[in-house]
Image (tube, rainbow, N blue to C red; front, side, top):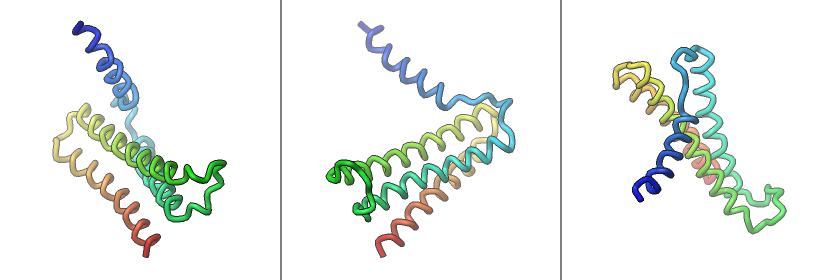
Length: 127
């Protein structure tokens, strides 16, 4: 019975490793810029959700009553992508055996920068 309980954990662990795993040999300047770009994309997805929440008339959805759902979904999806990107950065820098302070500061700064972009948009949109 314990084997059945472990199987979903192993599947989800394998899935997370597949998404987050990067060969340390392939980390170069392009990878770093791609990683930073991913933070921007995640913030943009959250901003799109916030825009849709603020301006539901701009939606071209087939079912207008689902606009709140889509706005919440986009904000949540962007936040999840942001978290996954943060975890991937920590995972990679750990595999490179860098000092813990280096990757914590680097990752938190990037995460906070994109979160600030999202919060700034929210403040401007609702002002």
